[in-house]
Image 1 (tube, helix red, strand yellow):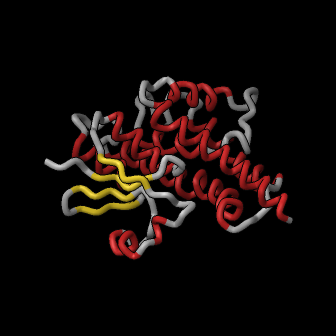
Image 2 (tube, rainbow, N blue to C red):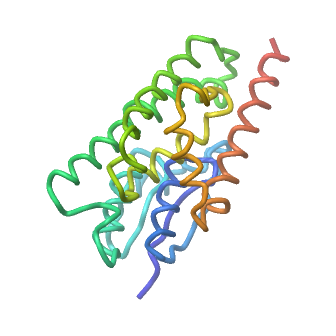
Length: 223
């Protein structure tokens, strides 16, 4: 049986979330690298496959899926040997879904609000207000982790995978106060101890932060 194909970029937090999930499932994917900065996601061929022209995009046989959260859930449902990463229990699954929506609606949305204009449109706006807007999420993360080691309880789920990929892509620009958010920082450390974390998430996150800083300096120098 052919391996599922993941169109992805290591710079992309959503791509890395799917890659982390695949590693947790011990699932071998075929990776097709898409260069976002060169617009490779905007080719007619890619748009025909995915009208939203977003990555990650998963092709599994005849199925084509986009949105990282949907892909992570699909992979657990189809390939997981058990359901810990995306529980079948109705209440537990609803809690995971809620955290996934927090990632897409708050964490990633605020990262994108800061990063996209600088990376693609020559902006120089890295204001205190935009940084503070991201940091408001840190308070919520601390509350999520107040009583448990992971975002939805005692077990790691795809919500942890998705949120950590986003947060570690912006935590240099929007620092996390170690005195205010000890549970949050302990969770980040816990996630970083996964045996596949460095290659699958850390390197891409660090590269994205480096490129962001370089692009911001370049934009400011051009003004």
